[in-house]
Length: 179
Image 1 (spheres, helix red, strand yellow):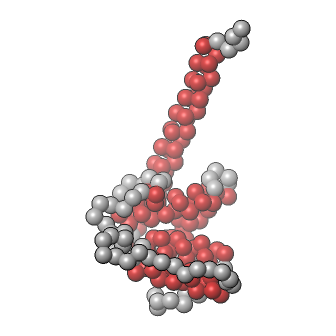
Image 2 (cartoon, helix red, strand yellow; image 1 turned 90 degrees about the vertical axis):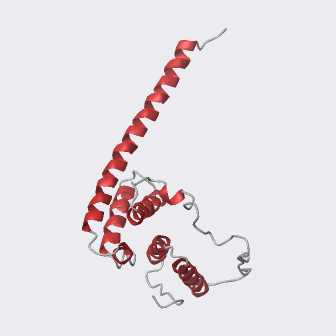
């Protein structure tokens, strides 16, 4: 005896299709609003982009405004803290590269021809074994990671990392590379 007929199954599937369409429409609207913010930031950029973007959310007013916007969306419960950080990174990637905002820009592979540093003739990067540590040692390691990111011209990643670090440790001081 069949309790569920094809009509009921079709109705359930159709309801999920409706949800998927509504979510896609909402995301399109959200991305359009973020793009308008990005366009306003491009218009406000009155110096070379690298200089305009220099620093982090605590030291750069433009970065601070964008962080505050995504943090506010997070605080309202619409997105997670990690999504807010991800969207913020995507925003600055779109700004720096002059492409349209896409919420997953920071997850995209590097453009063709851009080196990742792991090609032929490049030594495999290694890292020391960690058996014991403390907060000052962690700060030194984070400072080294920031220096590496800057040497690789990963300014957006470095700024995002600094934002994350100073959110946790407001007294963090970089000890590698004089900025």
